[in-house]
Amino acid sequence: MLTFFRKHVPNGQPQVPVKQTVEDLLKQEPPPEANFGRSKLCHTLADVVADAGAVSLLLQFLRTKGSAPFLLFWTEVARMEGRPPPWPSPALTDDVSEAAVAIFERFFAPDATERVAAPRGLVEAVEAVIRRKEAPPKDIFHPLQEYVFQVINKDHFDEFLKSDFFHQHKVEVLTSSQVRLVDLLLNESALFYFTEFMEQEGHQALVEFWLAATNFRKHLSDEPAEAQADAIVLYDKYFSLQATTPLGFGDSLRLQVEENICGEFGPSADSFEKAAAIALHAMEHMFLPDFLQSQLYLRK
Image 1 (cartoon, rainbow, N blue to C red):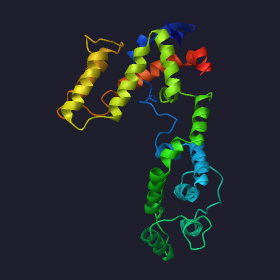
Image 2 (tube, rainbow, N blue to C red):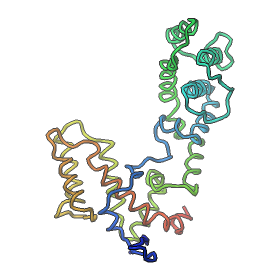
Image 3 (cartoon, rainbow, N blue to C red):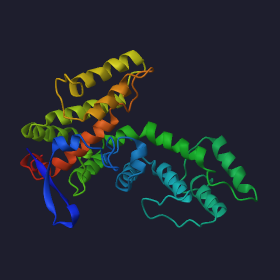
Image 4 (cartoon, rainbow, N blue to C red):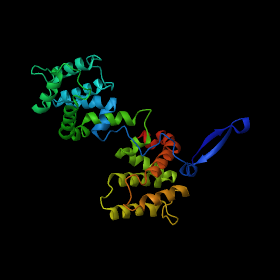
């Protein structure tokens, strides 16, 4: 069984290595930075625009569609609101009035070279505010920003996820020295090899539970009775005292899960979130380093 060494210094004595097992980790609180799992493999447009590497590839993709100004406008507004741009861009003044005029002229003026096609009413509303003498609010472009976000999401994002540009992003993430376990679990081929590795280690059930908990969160039924039935299936398999596939979680977590799924209004989407975070942390800490050095990973 895999273990790792945790060092401590009792009463000022020399450090002593202490073996810790998967079972130990499953009975502990997850570290503060642990969560259900946020991957760099950006499955939503909101994830992409928050990732400098991914959003740059999205811009390259949109250039092939003649729609780059939509994303350029969105990021320039974000920069005016205080968020750094993902790529070099024309300097914007700190003066909100001047910045708003510069953005409007770049993307919406009749002679704009990077013109964004948007509903006339939205454009005219912004123009009217800009023409006033007082400084406009920082969210002056918010309706237009929401509009272009929806255009990108509806008309281009699914195609981007299937494109060579997004494939390049996946390769970069999965071959990075900073690859995280959640990145592997959300990639079909990498998941296959990691599951095989975990089967060899005798802990495939941890992967299966994390996937089941993730699926439960994403597809929670609107019907309380149906949602509770789905939750009880997971509980009976992994948590109950008669569990068919006990993972080794502590009693306090088992009782917390019971409380989560037996509420008056049925289980919530985060009923298994803490348990999933613990399982993810245990797998990442105990197995990921060895997997990344294994032939299964290196040959994938």
